[in-house]
Length: 335
Image (tube, rainbow, N blue to C red):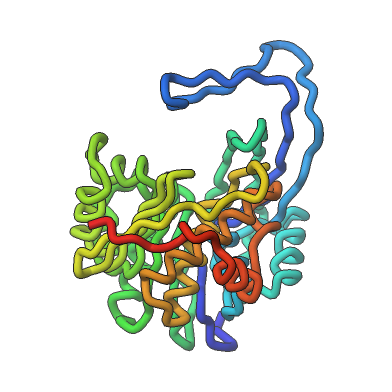
């Protein structure tokens, strides 16, 4: 398979269909400070639900590709799907968004990833199952400007070596890395070449603590630790408290969350919106201090909808919201 046109933003990672099941009858129990929450339902009983919403062609990387496309970039997704009806629905969803699917590999006899999202209030618990595919890197005739790497199945470990080979032989290609669960499980030593080659790294505070094995570390230490692994830029979010960022000179910045116009409906996809939008801004030449203002705006609108892609903004609307942002929505020096 050969590339037919230049790609600004090539997202790599698993594509899934999410079925959002909105629960009516459940109980959430948390430790102090709303930490370590669990959800429970009656066992061996019939549990009522309000509605089911099916979202095709989602997942960290497809969400990012759609975000970039709506912001005006030429975007594509590199992933594997099965030759089933779910896969066909995913391809149709990509076509509707205008995301290039020329790097989507269809594997005969395989199923397409299908997840169930238990939605209760603004939070969700996801039942996941990643199918095992034969992950390969197709021919990239023209270098993409950015590769955006995110969640991929546990069986794709060797693929990271193939990707690292490509990145090391194409130094002009920039890499954004938003690690998924299995990529964090692989560890920083095993993915050292990927970390070293990363231009912009994205995770939340708890993930940064887990990646670095520093459960008590705060932002200055976390940023220094992540950048020591190789990334030039690190962006570490902290939920409703805002996000932090640092550059290769060690300058740290803070941006608050953009105010919610209404209480969030669903937080699914908020992180994808933030990281992909900042990456798109960096691609457009926006300095980091301004680029990090873009991300929370897209995230704010995403959480006003069920599903990770419905609320993704176009560039014109995002810039209008930025222009009319409240006085307190600005970048401040963190360290």
